[in-house]
Structure formats: C-alpha cells, structure tokens
Image (tube, rainbow, N blue to C red; front, side, top):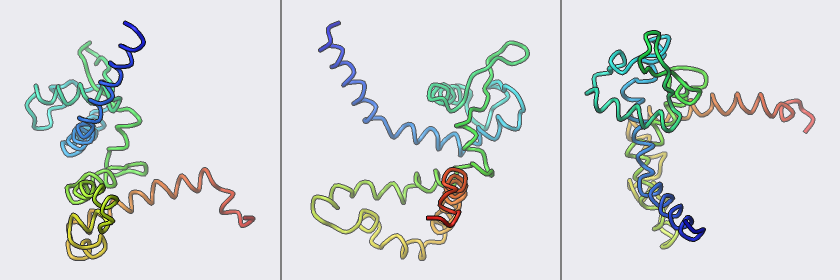
Length: 183
C-alpha cells in the first residue's frame, strides 16, 4: 500500500472515530449504571462473565465487556480454573463508588441529557453570537436551571464535590509550593 493510500485509510479510521465517538461515553455510562466495576471489585479476583451477570443477557454483557477490555477499562485474566475472567484496571477503579479517586459523579453529571443537550447549540453560540449553549438548550442559565430542578441540582452538587476531591488532592500533592506562602 502506498503512503497516499495508507493516509487515506487512516483518515477514514479517524473519521469513524468521530462518527461513533459518543459510543465510548455511552458504554462507559452503561457499565457504571450496571455496576460492573463494583461487581468485579466485590468478587476479589478474576470474575467470569457468568458470575458477573448484572441482570443482563450474557450475549449483550459479553459485547459490553469486549468493548471495555478493548478500551483498557477492564482487563481479561484467566480464573483459577482457566476460564476467561475480568479484573479491574486503574481506569475502571475510577468508576467504583464511592471512593477517594472516584470520578463517577462527575462522569454522570457531564454525560446526562441535560448537560449533553448544550453541545447541540455550540455552533449557534459562535456563529450567531447567541446565548450560552446551556441557556439556548434549556431557556435559563445553568444556575437558575439548577435551582429550579432538584434532581439536576443533586447531580450537579455531587459532580462538583467529586471534581473538588480529585482536583484539590492533585493540587496539594503536585503544587505544594503554591501553599507554602512564598508566592
């Protein structure tokens, strides 16, 4: 294959990643909502697909797990009897709830329909100098919407608390000079 043909193939692959980019988010959200990371963690060792059953059709669960393994969210490892099992990775541990490095609440906030709807108004905001995308999507700014919608307010508060736990600990660990009073 020539360099030009190879470049064309790579371009097509990249385009498909954009076309179906939402699927990564959707499958990770599905895994969280099904409690897959917690089920694997509670098993304390490689867990087979049969033992993992989280109320799903085994064939569907297998497809989800193949996707998640391919994206390094979980890892395959043989069980003691030599059958295929699944274990955590550092990435999947971020989906465990609750925990110090857990990012589930922030992930669920940013990937719920209310927040995702705003992205559909991004180009209008820039092209037509329209209101902020969230306001265009929901008729109110984020603060007013949150105040009037208790379910979203709880989701937002949990997401922001999650973000603060992760960011503050990283700032303290990696930017200690900021806190020593010499700046």
